[in-house]
Image 1 (cartoon, rainbow over the protein chains, first blue to last red):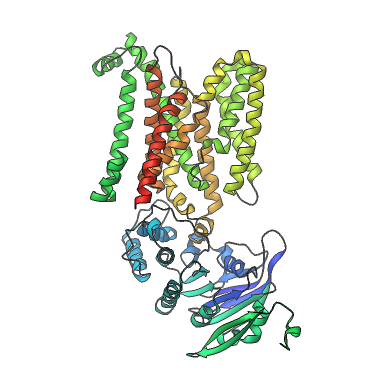
Image 2: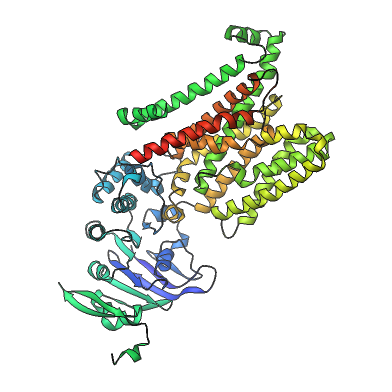
Length: 267
Length: 342
């Protein structure tokens, strides 16, 4: 399942936020979008998940335009974890995960054996088996996020879009979650496109990083190609040192460089 | 009572708990129905009621068949419709304070009813259809004002408040100009079922049954919608279409109910809310529970209104507020205490 954006332009009813953006997400890869606040990376993810209709260009899944899919059929292939979601508090984790089967069931069909199996599998894979009878209101932030990932897994998608999945989580839960994302990619072959804020997470867990700036792609490629001192100065206006740990670039930020780069050269 | 129910859930599991809740609701509806048939200026026991129905010539037959039974059924249908409309709207708006008043049905029906009763009393027989049209018209106006590439719940609520206050101003103005003719108007504003007959039952039941069936079929979609628009789209739900269908169902339900019984706002707010506290917000259960509870609540409150100051009849809207609100507050407090405990 290949996800492809072709020259898309995106807006929220005003000036375009993104123009001429093209991206090819190869099958079974992990692609991460990075960029400053307001750069439009979440907007791009919305367009790839058909939450936002491009004013120009189109997004294709498997060569077929997203808009020409029946939205339910599309939901069986493409799942997404939005940044904002609402969980009714007295729902149990299992109830929540069961909602992931919604696109697979016909209007009046009750739950089938294969739905229950998919729910069990999703609960197990996301490490939420023990939580399944707990009410969502009693979960910690990390557990809740895992429960939502389990919902996405119950959807049995080929492509999963994650919008800042680690926000509000402490550092150990951030890593738990990213390890889970990696497992889904390695073991289930799910293609992942996500937005991350932490550059070190992006470098460690992505096959490809796309840096977004000035309404389009600033640069894109393997982590070591994108995570460089010059690029990060341009993208985020920060001074950094990059060190290499297990062949993965690590960012050590040393400060802001809000002034134009030329004046900064001497200091 | 509430804590007792929750203990059943802890001890015997969720399925048993749900069965117990629905059995209790069914008992409540049946008990309210029978209680209402028996009570009134003339108290009848069950054998007398059955005998009365077998003898179409008797006085008791007329009391039961032509007065109490239709009024009782009208109460049940009005309660069901308003409770269901409220349950739908609270889900759609993701707002526990939503009630049929929010989409303008009360103010629209109220204005139309006031116009008929005060300006054109010779057309009094048009009261029900006029109120229905007023209710539907007001909600259409509010949707049109809130529409901008889709129905945003917050914009809908705010347009509803604005339109309702304009209509409310017209209602007040008319009431001041025609203060000598207010008797029927006040009962309509409070909500009452005095002298409702089979004619009214026949207006109500198609909407009520249609609304129940449609909302039950679509309850799963509302569960998905509650997760948030983005998540719902991701799960393959046609969010806009679902929202429009549900709002249409709820405004028709509420319009039918309000045009027959007057502005009984409270049931639509409180019945679904109470059921949500007890049975949770899975709409597959919440819809039927709210519908049953609304029916029982309105029947029993109407009966209390008939007998408590006999021979004077208190409008059901007053009884509902006096009895319902404290019970609602009690549930709210126990619920909050339980929530802080766990």
